[in-house]
Image (cartoon, rainbow, N blue to C red):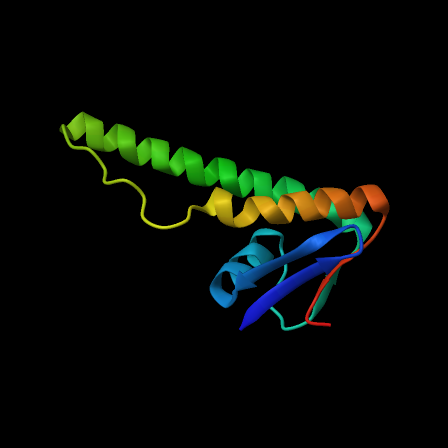
Length: 107
């Protein structure tokens, strides 16, 4: 499945199914083919995404420190990281909140 997150306040954000599912879980939603994030829920969603990004970066830093303590180095992360995947959605949520518009998908 492909998610297409839309708002009148911003451009569309497309995500493949697993990435869209992960985003929805981060903001406390169950993955679903259709949905809406009301303007009042945009702020808490942004906060949840930013916390998930901080947690992800802290986990990477801890793993690097552990590897360094063993005298090893971690390989560079493969593919696109969580920050690159979720940051466009933060921009959409900020614009939607500022314009008092919802973010929808599957409609």
